Image 1: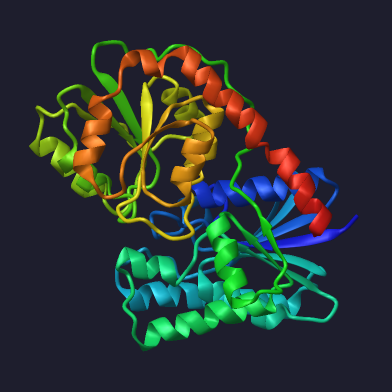
Image 2: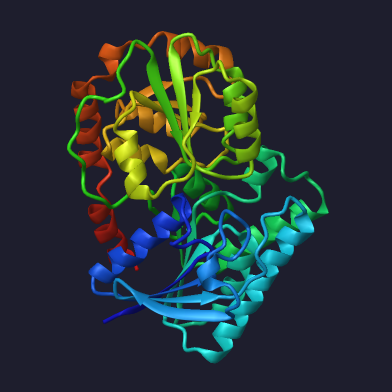
Length: 387
């Protein structure tokens, strides 16, 4: 049985697309007769503090669904202070180096990037002639940070670019979750082996039904991270509520601002439902007419994994983020597009929607498109062939 190690900064019980993606990859490879182990920090995301059940521990090893999970210490923080965020990554990198010294590492290792510094530590320390290093790139840093306004083109940015290039250079295979990522890697290293590995979810398709929230108004739902990149606070301020209700699930940096906005505007039909488990969320989402997938700015290389998850739920989508995500929505007829950053166009698009376009018949078509085009197991078999 071939052994494989996955190194990631996010893993359940943490919530979110990143942890779900790596969890499905780990259990999927285990089902394909790999002996899988995972290295991840003690759970801390997105709250920025280690979860209560793991407090006071330096390391914990457990087995879940036949996958061995090593949870390592780090200094947990979600502070906006860049030095504290850097120290968080350095602390995890130190724990990784310590683990590498005292443990035998398999000949095939999948390293998640970003964070760039953590990936750099792995690529630097684990390079061996007989070892295959696979870099799983979910976002293009530092380019994405520049587009989000987190970085400026200064000395630090140039250092991050050098780290990024080092990581690609040392990888034997680069997995990218979008075509844009693979194009970028090939522009730097034309001969590099690459593989398109989309963030397809792995769960049973639910039985569809008409949305249960009735009334004349269209019910729009957002579920996910309430971070700066998603721009949900700006969305709350900018939406035209004349024929919609807006429902929000999730947590993150903008949560308190959003809750305060709702309390200061009690006449607006906005409901914040808090954070729920993934299974609870799936059941809840089936009750709404349409979901919105926003990005405050178009981010090169980014394709929200929500697209594939919501398609399996048969949930019509309103995409407001630009880039490759638009192409996927249009190609597979999964919903509607609003011009990224143009809130006037977004509101016009919403005003044009009718309840008849959000019917069970349309939802069934979307789910069928997901079944035919976003199959997790088919993709996994293709990945298995190149590992």
